[in-house]
Every structure is written in structure tokens, then in C-alpha cells.
Amino acid sequence: MDWTIDNMPSMRGMTAIVTGANSGIGWEAAKVLAARHARVILAVRSVQRGAAAKNRILAETPQADVAVMRIDLADLPSVQAFADEVMERERKVNLLVNNAGVMAPSYQRTKQGLELQFGTNHIGHFALTLRLLPALCKGRGARVVTVSSMAHTMAKALDIPYLCGDGRYRRFASYAQSKLANLLFAYELQRRVQSRGLALQSIAAHPGFAATSLLDNGMFAKSTWVRPFARWVNRFAQPSEMGALPTLYAATHPDLVGGEYIGPVGGMRGYPGIVRSSDASYDVDAAKRLWDLSLELANIRPDDWIALADAM
View (cartoon, rainbow, N blue to C red):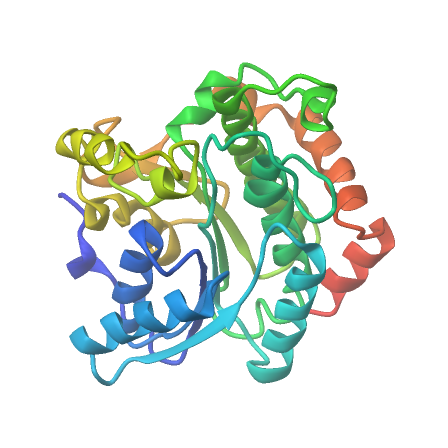
């Protein structure tokens, strides 16, 4: 049977965080989670846009419990401050959706000097997830859903020298590497929490070919022809509400155990189910190397990760 939001269970009593929830599939996912009675935190870079997104949700679900909190995934102190505030205010988090991202911008760096796509799409979410570990699993059914992309298949292997800035930069190659990193992280997180017996599931998802806001944040953001180009692309893409279904499936399907990859079963579009990512994404040695590098770049010591996990 085709899986839709009608198959979702109630989220009453649960707290969900969605990064990049002011537009696109992040907003669609947050809207549905709120309609299913979750307390939803819109984790956004612009509080003004976040407030507008919250108002759009409340217009459809007036009784929704929605909060807006600022986070800049390209600035690690902002990630730390966000996590500290969440743990102080919420005490528990049942669902973290690592959704925000940038795609194919001109060469830029994060506040800590990392290439923007790798620093935002992977390192920012890596740091956020680990910083929130004490709050995760305090409630029932805790999950981390990391949103990747079909573009990860363009990266045939993890290229750490390239990610660390060896002088090369190609917009879409860097995007593909960051999306491969998302998958390697999601699978490695599952292995590590499982080995420690932690009640947390890590699941990856991708939206297929869906209409999102990535064009507005990426290489065409300042172009005068972005809007007609985006309209042309969106003629062939499935709508954002369909693109959000894999995220929602990964977040709520009761039969998942962790370590799965959820996407449209038809490939680029359609209803969600368990699919397979590229061979490179299942490279355990590459995942371990990426984990160690990510700890270093996120300024998290190995002992700190263990302490954060044990604090759960």
C-alpha cells in the first residue's frame, strides 16, 4: 500500500526539532508533525522567516504547539548555544530531523573556515546531533532522521582531502560529498548507539526529485533568472509535500529499527519505503574516518562524545 500521512501515528507528548523548517520539505514535515500533536521546534537561521513559517502552520492547525529557535549550522558556537537552550527548556527530544542544507553555492566558508556545503550540511548537523544526545532518548521512540539526496551517488568515494580544502572546488561535487557524508554519518551513528545499548534510532532519508527551496539558497540565489528556472525545474519535480513523505516515514514508521534509508520506492518520485543508497555510503572504514574527522572539526573530543552519550 502507498504510505501517506494518514498512516502516521499520533505524536502527542513528543518533541520534534526540524532544521531548515521555514520552507520546502522541512516546513512540510514540521507542519504534519504539528498536526499530529507533536511539539515542534522550527530550527532556523532567520527568526523572522521562522515566525512566518510558524504562522502558516497555525493558520492550518490553530492548536499546534510550535516554537521558533535560531540556529546557524555554519557557525558552531550557534549550534552549541541552540543545543544548550533546548536542553534547558525542553529536557527531552524525541525526534531530530537534520533537514537544512545548501546546494552548489559559489565557494564560501563557514565561520570556522570550512567549505560551506560540507560545514553546513554535515558538520553542523553532526555537532547538533551529538550536542543534543543528553536530551534525546529521554522520551519514548527517539529518532534522528538525516536527510540526504540522490546526488550522493555522484560521489564515488569519500574524499577527505577534498573536503578539508585541498584547493579544488566544484559546486556539485562538493554537494555530492556532503550528501554522502550525511549517509555515512547516519549509518555510523546507528552502529555506535546500538553498540552502547542506547534507545535511539538513526535513519536516513531523501526526498527524491522534489520542489524545495535549495535553488534559492544555492548557486542561483543571486541570479536574475532563478525564478523562471526554478519554475521550469518544479514542473518536473514532485511537490514538496510528497518530498516530505520519506522524512515523515523515517520519523514515525513503527517497523523501522535504525540504519534504514527511506526514499521514493520509484526512484525519483512517488511514495516512500526502504531503499538502498550507494555502495560508498556503506563503507564502514570511511564512516569511521569521517566520524573522527568530524569530532575534530566540531571541536568535540572523543571522550566528550562518550560522556554525552552516557548522559542519556
